[in-house]
Image (tube, rainbow, N blue to C red; front, side, top):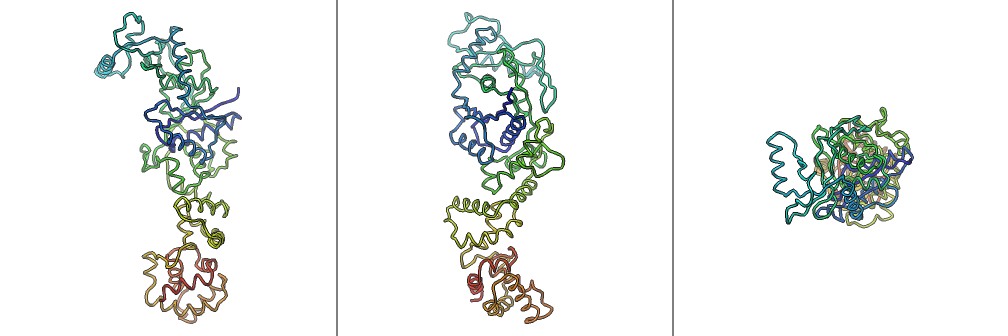
Length: 468
């Protein structure tokens, strides 16, 4: 039997970090077992499902590198199949028509609450015939759940979990308007898609017992279940937007690389010794859902930034330039000129170790792209005192006459500081105002490297803008 896993998001919202991790675990487990990973869009909630959300889910998974096998299955297109199964249960005596009114259902809930019981249907139409049905009430079809025995799930992550059948009421499988419910649709689709392993968040663990009952009633093979603990924030609280519960495209827009985010999500609740950086090939070889921890993982931006910084450093200069150009176009700016491309490529080796995200890299790269006159930071402006400007004025003529190699530039400025000005003057006394004048910032890659890359004419004109 070929193992088949699935990811089944509901397009009532965009692809979030928890869903992305679930998709990743399913894909890796299928690959680890030599099986297939399938995608199902559970779009039966027509009031809340949107084409925009479906598009965002598909694009988010593609961006993250979570490719699926075969065409996606859209649950809404299978409603007729779901209805047929509901009626087959009815014909087999494993389901029945229920005519309970909304008022009766509300009364059941109130009684259960007053008696300290969980709310549930009391089975009042389980043994009655449709001839007793009240006029004007469209029935639902309820599954006739077994009352004796128990449901046992040998969960890949949670271990053996058991629930008595008497604790599970008769769930609705077909609504009064003829639409199938989630519970029925999931079971039918998992069977028809050949799903062998259902790996999902542990908020679905309760659903697994009801779904198991349906699989048994239909005589279908029951898939293996694995329920993953949910993700919490770094403080241990339920994940929220401030913790990182954001749509995947938000991480892309913040400048995270898909390889880095995939690596981070892999380590979020699963591990392989002390390994932090794990290649795709290693992930497939090592991953086993049984190694997922039972406790909620904690999402930590500091760790994510560290992983992303590693992948930035490992990326080729050309690849990063392409990503920066894409972000630039998305921001409504023109493509890089040939001169700008050459400058960025020459400076990329020094830019990469200084940043953690692509937006940091884009900001740092402005030293090679900024148009004159430069917009200086407040810290840079404070360095350009009258004394500093006098120093730069004396230095300018020497710079104009010098060669334009970073090492020669450093020697020239050091000589100027220690011999022309004063032996007690350190290099930084001149280099820092020079940096502020040429880059507009107090912080940059090594200033003499920046000057070499920018070229003589650009540096002297930027310097002149300060000295006028």
